Length: 70
Image (cartoon, rainbow, N blue to C red; front, side, top):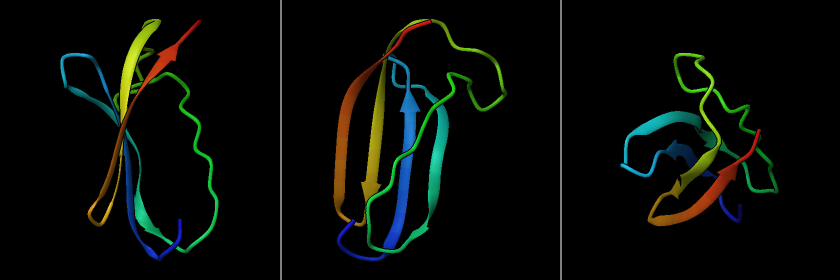
């Protein structure tokens, strides 16, 4: 991150339903890493497959596919 701000990182299924929000907090500039344990927000294990992550900060948005393998 180049500037301080609120960062949100969420995982979605391919139908667009939010599975879990991994991060939604104010962060200082710097490099960060976040891991997803494959659980949804109700602590239920998700199946192997393709998921989407959405990373948002201010006007910046990044959407990418990720693969969960078990």
